[in-house]
Image 1 (cartoon, rainbow, N blue to C red):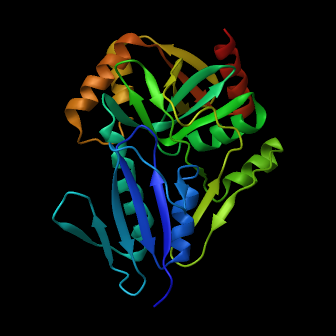
Image 2 (tube, rainbow, N blue to C red):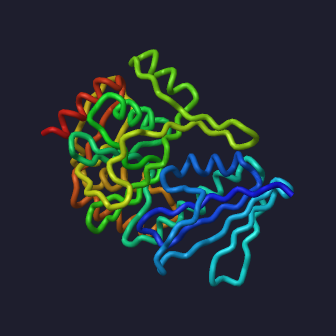
Image 3 (cartoon, rainbow, N blue to C red):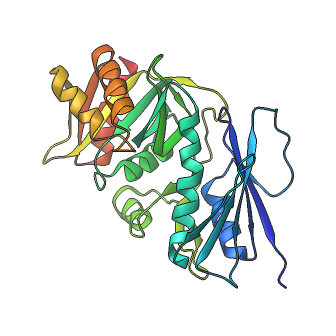
Amino acid sequence: MCDSSKVIVYIPNTTFAYLLITDSSELAMAISHIYHPYARNDSMCFDNKVTMSTIEYYLCNPTSLRVTAPDVDEVYMLTVFPKQVVAIISQIIQYSLLTVKPHNLFHGAAVNINGKTVVFFGKSGTGKSTFITYLLHSCDCSYIAEDVLNINYSNNKILPFPRPLHLRADTPNFLNINYGIRVNTLYSKSGEFERSLFIPSKYFDYDNEVDIDLYVMLSRSSISEIVLKQDAKDKRNLLLHSCFLPRNLHINMESCIKLSNKHEIYELSVLDLSISAILLNELTRG
């Protein structure tokens, strides 16, 4: 029998930890990279509020994913395709963020720039990851989170979740040709677990909640400009469309109403990354 690899993932301030056991070194490496800096291969010490669940996946039975939770009699067996494994494990781990109350999950990105924490929303394909990567290479900027944003809507704080940025295959080349920025990406292409990751070198904080100073909605346009959104209903709808779990209706409405009523939201049209960064710098220094 092949040797098994173990990876433990724990996100601070949640109540769940996950132990991945697998005979696939590619899967273990992929999860370690995706959940850097929260993943490790050795044992970890937790307080008595944290429960450890076990996720098992073996190449000898590649359509079965076994999840065992403490104090639960049932063992969950999921039928999966090999290419789905990383995504399903990521979903299981990310749902643990919902154990932190009162929080809600949003799809976006967050950085600290010029001493202010900026949260970005935007539809898939608007260039959030590309813009964040540009800012990290060109500005006084530290990384907080990308893709999954865990926002405390009662006190307007974000729980950092600084996973590596998932970049499209052509993004590093685009940044190099158009802006002279060389991005050192990490590729994991072995077997079924293909990933292209950029691990930032500058983290703001990944253990404590951080105050949010600005909300910015990214969009595509023929010009680069930044506009303050005035209409309360428009602001609420922008937030609703950014909720990570669409079916979480009650929490989605409650969180979006509270955030839109209390905080300003800007819309930044991104055409040229350098001009957009200048506009954002001016806003955060104002």
